Amino acid sequence: MATQYGTQMGRLRNSLPVDLPMAGDIHGRVRVFNEKVVLAAQPTSDIVEVARLPKGARVLYGILDSTVSLGSSTLAIGIAGNSGKYRPAAAFTAVDTPTLFGPAAVAGEALATEEIVILTIAAAALPASGTLRVMIFYTLD
Image (cartoon, helix red, strand yellow):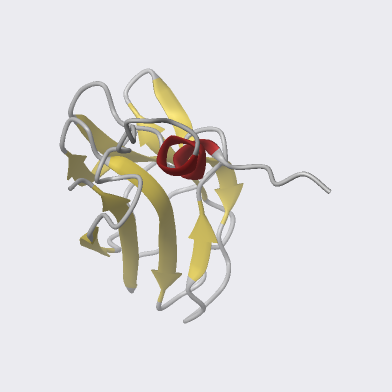
């Protein structure tokens, strides 16, 4: 039986001299951009900025948590030009239930430039009251 290595372990175990991975890939500090959105019937024509991520950040995952159901409104989480980069448009009706999001295709990949993460509201306005928490976890160094 052969021993195989993932990308980072391969760098540490298969090359001489050792090809050290980036700090964000191994032993990096996990950071969070923790945003609170006060729900106030924001309409579908609005976007809400929820994070500013630095160049080089490696997004691991996000968490949504709300004090109320968002009803029939849908939320996409992404950036300008790719509104569903981190979460495609979908309803969010879970109350007080932290819910993970983040597609595997972008998880752990270094950002080439700074990003402003946005919520895109669709289908219906957000509720008139309550709190939505959007937390983006990432490594940098």
